[in-house]
Length: 148
Image 1 (cartoon, rainbow, N blue to C red):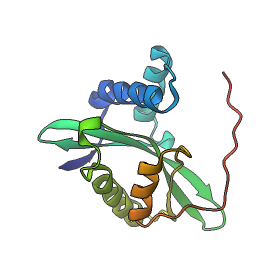
Image 2: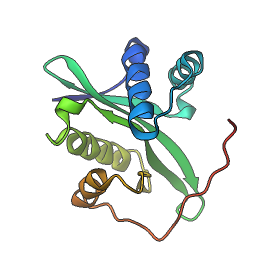
Image 3: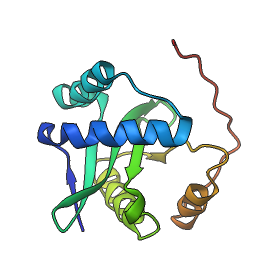
Image 4: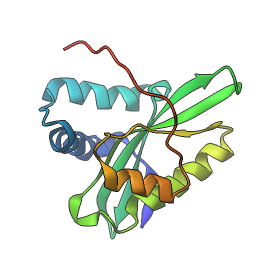
């Protein structure tokens, strides 16, 4: 398996993955024009984050977005996993674990203070995966306000 930084040439597959993930996790249909602009915004301005993909025998099988949160407590960025998607036929085969270890090494080399992610409260399989990788469930709850 090859892990690499995504390029704008990968935008179409990333958009497809995001649409599949939104439907699978929240039964939400993303507006194609908005997701297209959102994904391309990352490629046009790395301050928004960076996409990473996993390839297996030349086929893109997973993608994720890393975004940054400034931590004044640590005087460094904390990297957030966002928009994680693994093709169903490649799940439970170590794809995310491989991505995670690669990103963890990248974060460490780049001075990040740590890694974070959020997960649906009923996604027990993903939670087990994250815990097996050494991540801990914290005492925080997440709240949001989002425009429709």
